[in-house]
Length: 132
Image 1 (spheres, rainbow, N blue to C red):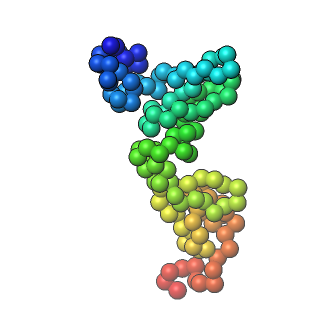
Image 2 (cartoon, rainbow, N blue to C red; image 1 turned 90 degrees about the vertical axis):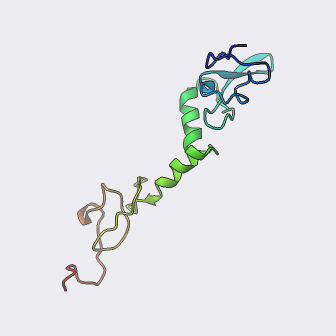
Image 3 (cartoon, helix red, strand yellow; image 1 turned 90 degrees about the horizontal axis):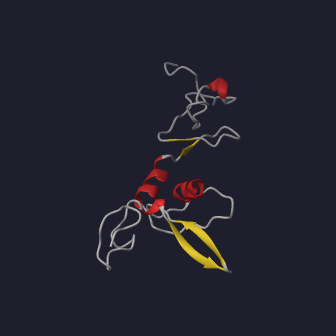
């Protein structure tokens, strides 16, 4: 039988997306029958989990949000772990791959707020110059 997502040919035991690890399964929807109407539920391409959506929502956006927040696959979890250095500037939600510490107040900021004038810097009582 031919897979309707990747167009490859499989036996009856391997025709399901999960059994042949179909890389094109995200293109298709799992049909579910609920209260006499058919709902379309997109499937995560990384973990093959159905992603519930409300009528009128864009499936691609919901799948992207799932991958960014909830997906349990290795690639998605590794992506989330890289950006762990959150900016300390009030209201900024930017995260960086590496720590960007201000030389004067020694607090972590994003690249946009790393300079003392950009984050209302309050220097510690240590000398500004490293030479004394």
